[in-house]
Image 1 (tube, helix red, strand yellow):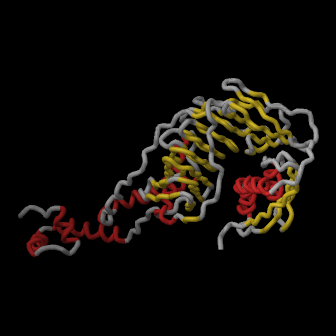
Image 2 (cartoon, one colour):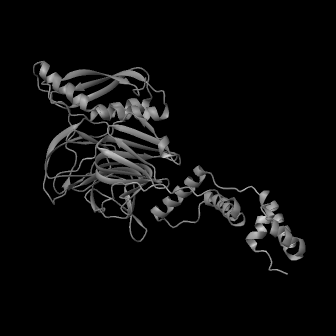
Length: 453
């Protein structure tokens, strides 16, 4: 008797692709007939199986969450969602092993995408730190961050507001994030604004700017990129999709969705992070009452307690303790010498009698107010987040002293939430305007709209 059929010949006969000489052999070989019958049975069994695989969206979410765990480096037990995802992935793997004949055609790998390489992260100096700012040390313990502290690479950070500066880069962030590593900034929940060469990793997306001012905000289900100026590249590490954003512009997408489905919108203004000139000098504000409004060089920094640092030289400081009048003065900072800032005796502003302001003085004040528009719009944005259709028109009424200090602020007009009205009044009280020569009451009309038709 001739040699038995090979495995390939048996499979061919089971598929119905046999040849006459194979049929002749089977007629006289019981062993080969049995092997062909077994092959037909296996194919009938496999044909009834339905392979189960993760959808593209589910798989990318699983991978994005895994990347977050790796980048954060936080030792923790497996999250609950992973206990569900792993059996699904295992089921897909079993089907791939027992049913090799149902593997689809191999798709070509995506072409590599060129993008700017991340620059090495250098140590930065904190120039603003909220009272809750903290960082994680090598031992895993968190310690407070104060203005003037140097923050090295690779550390996890958390703060309501934190500004880090270096000669080539300024970062202003809120929420949970990490500085350094494969990406210069690994963003958790929160936002980070960058001025200079930086790369921000938000899930599976890398946002890279070389000479740009941009902001990346991330919530549980959405990522938003605002580009004030310059060019920014967004790269999806999973699919290699690439998208360029040129400022001024905004791009937002749902976390886990294809980058190509990102929605382009008009830019929402944000404050540009600015680095101080020269070595920073910490301001000691520990003696200020809690809730004191702090403004330096016309820029508001919120309420004490807050930690600040500035470059050496003369600075104009304005302090408004709760329930008291605004106090303003100049301070001279010297490099390497911390400055303690306290309150002087409470007294009312003394207004000097003078003529009515001329047209040029009023024009200068109007220009000052136009430059403050982004700060006022931030109050409206808080209302808009809670109510997407929020809109209205109000008058911001300011009582301005002869020296340009806002003595009182009030809001009149359409009904707006108390929190938004309080935000507008608090923000306006921190303004320092051009001198008018005498105390004046100004009405500033504000149209609160998202700008969409």
